[in-house]
Amino acid sequence: MTLFNQAPTIGEIRAALAAGDATPAQYVSDAYEAARHSQATLHAFCYLPDTPPDTFVDATAPLAGVPVAVKDVIDTADMPTEFNSAAYKGRRPERDAWVVARLRAAGATVIGKTVTTEFAWRHPGPTVNPWNGAFTPGGSSSGSAAAVAAGIVPLALGTQTQGSVIRPAAYCGIVGFKPTYGTIARTGVLPLAWSLDHVGLFARRVADVAYVLKLVAGVDVADPHASHVAAVAHSAGKRRIGVLSKQAGGAIEPAQQAALDVLAAQLARDGAEIVAVDLPEEVFATPAYALQLMAVEAAITHGELVERTPELVSPAMRGLVDEGRKLPATTYARIKAAQMPMAQRFHAWLTQTMTLDALLVAPATGEPPRGLDYTGDASFCAPWTFLGVPAVTVPMRFGPSGLPLGAQLVGAAQNGAGLLALAEWVEARTGWEDAVTQRRA
Image (cartoon, rainbow, N blue to C red):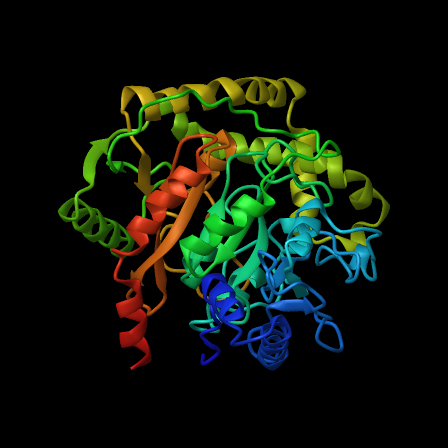
């Protein structure tokens, strides 16, 4: 596909505005036109206004001129929020989600709503992978990842309950960040599973994510789900990174493993301490635990709708609700009771036993699956979602099918800023920009 507009990064927008070389309205209008132009092939947006959104902001505001795409499970007062559900067709929220309000207050402009899988679960929308339309962009934050990867916007909002930020970012060749659980308030965000839901960010550069995180991190009294992980102070090493003999999500494709190995070797040459580690055995149970928590909590959140209008709900969601209702209450209670202690033990293992700054792990099995019916395996992201720790993916290279392969860095709870600083250093050593240049030649 040829949808790559090379839209400026947030850093480039800020520099141009400071120099007087552009106006906020120019960037917003360009992004809006790119979004409309791409719709016939990319299908990243489920809603775009009839005209470019108004941009009446101070050019010195932190996000002035930054066009943003918002996943359609996150409320926007001036645009529909329908969750990719026939049951909510035409729904208009009364107010912005907390995170959207924070972005607007900082000067950003929402240009449209992006396609999500239904209720952020498995039933996909029409969005395709920008690198090859025959492949999935991943999910559930499909449209947000694709819109950033295609160069339409420099920033997009997503959510992750299993792997819905990290995996599509890896599949689309961009940066995806899931902060520590509770870092970004979820008021106005459709819940799928309150024990697991995170708000996340998509951008082309780690520096942009780090900049925006400072503006949107915060607690809202209307969101009762603050972090369930209390950070333990530790002395960070000098880029001490753990690599796994066995991935938490299972086996990965040879090309994905080779790419991780090459990156680890490059990081070692540039001064990082690469340490081979084995995860605590209990971590391997977390993908299954996360699915069980999600099934029960989704049944509570969406069960009434399924009962009332089953014909308006996909088989995927009906099946999830049914699964959640069949799970014994004792199973749910046992997993829920174990979640926080497991997170604390993982934190102690990472920061005290192994004294690591991060783990370098796979974000997915490898390249995205062919077709749009399946958005990929979330098992490689689910452990870190269940444990509530920050994770970021950066693109590395292209795989055998010519699609992106990513690397995921997992860090210590409440240290998202430190993880992003390390990720920015890693990003400069992946060779991704050279790979993209060669691809376009």
